[in-house]
Image 1 (cartoon, one colour):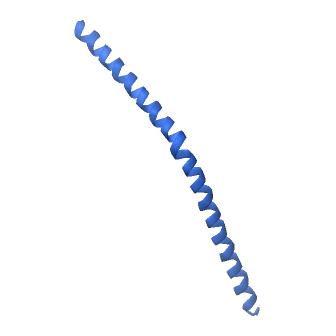
Image 2 (tube, one colour; image 1 turned 90 degrees about the vertical axis):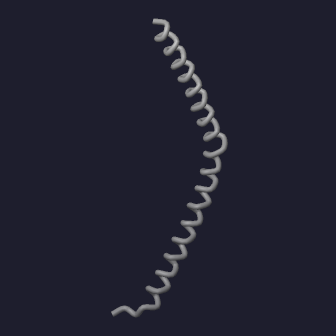
Image 3 (cartoon, one colour; image 1 turned 120 degrees about the vertical axis):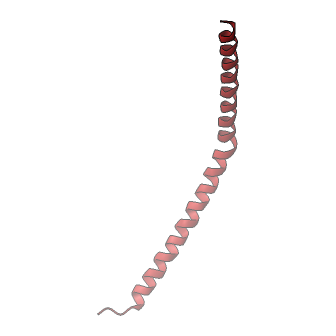
Length: 69
């Protein structure tokens, strides 16, 4: 029975340590990763939007230059 109690105690300690590590990872993600992703994500979206606008402009220019049948 002593072996079971000792094993249970060790598992409880390991679970507690794992829980603390997970909390630390989540905190790091929220403080460091998420803000950077938001900033860089909005910059990427703006860049893509600009490229799409330029593509649409070129398509309009091509359409204007092509005579209709």
